[in-house]
Length: 268
Image 1 (cartoon, rainbow, N blue to C red):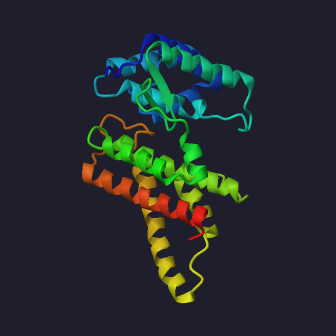
Image 2 (spheres, rainbow, N blue to C red):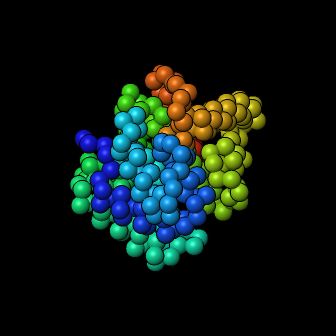
Image 3 (cartoon, one colour):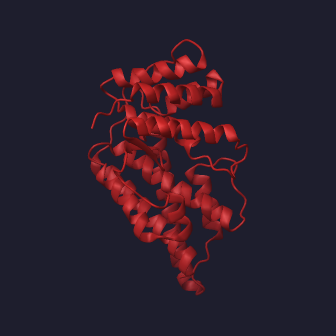
């Protein structure tokens, strides 16, 4: 599959994203954290977006569609219930979806831009997490594992994003206070404090030890994502990571997610 971003998609995304963010500083941060190469291009906001996306196509060291997915993820996953959601956002989302479809591409949850029909699903990841659909969540982690050899950075980002999504849904479902910083570590901290442990005092101590270990896992995965994950700019000489290390992070994320889902939905 050609991983370049089609020109019609560049045109639509540049117009929509530039209008939505409209500040050069916000656009610079968005593209740099998404791994777009080089310094910020000159010109107005729309031209900046267009030139940066075209640069991704001209740089053989980056995956254009991977970066595109990261750039549009927050915008594409805004929901009508989100604070500040406007009709213009829905129009922008539809415009991007239409441009992708013209090129046999589609946007999927978690910043994935893939061939249309490559991974059909009737539910989104959010639906799977809300319903405790472990079979579908297993498939999401399987996809992360399958991508490890090609891009371990992206697999770590995907695994971390699933934890973040689950924690946000858990917090909202139980009416807990959402942390000001909605990254994986503070989100997990809020969920961990609410989880009910074993009623037997002796076993609760043992379980506390395991949950404490899981907290260390979250800290590590969050740090991995910050330093090398595909959601952040990798720079010219990004730190290297072995496939075995990425696999450990993804499998650890899987363990944590399954524990939370089972505790939540089965009251085990």
